[in-house]
Image (cartoon, rainbow, N blue to C red; front, side, top):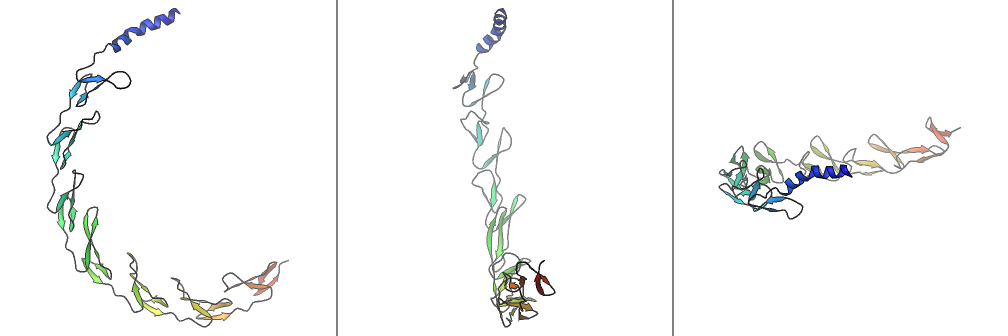
Length: 248
């Protein structure tokens, strides 16, 4: 019991000092918890509340957090004490944020300037994060600083792809040496518009042999596989010398 009393007596002066610590000027008791906080428009500085100094071209925020001020629209903070005007170059405009600038349509950002872009014939403007750029109209492609007409071969059409071959052969034709050649479908075959291969496939029960489709001669105990153009042995049989032999 005596030790508990001793501890309380030892802590009492410190508690009393904290409780009696005076509240500085321009402060008020916290709305929750113990202690005090500086009033709006003031900031804590070594147990005192000093007034927030609002620099030129700025306004007070009337908030207890942050610097207590923000720069006006068209100005940006340089450090914690000043606001500098945003210098907008010719061909540019002030961003809606009011803190930076962007280039007008038809201009591109180069360092701290906006340089005008020459729009070639058969092109149109596109907006980008760094300014404007141009894209060739449909049917034209970029050649240096110009838009030149795409040479589409006979039996082909523009495919609108942004990369690779800008044209595609029409159905029934396939690309060969930059041209669209007609697909010659042999007997017992049908046209196949896959992007690879010969352009045709053999009917079920036939297999490709060069440029023709030959009838598949099924050996005993065999059947056509899922493709219909090859064969496999029935269950309990295996291939051997072109035949299906019993699997012992």
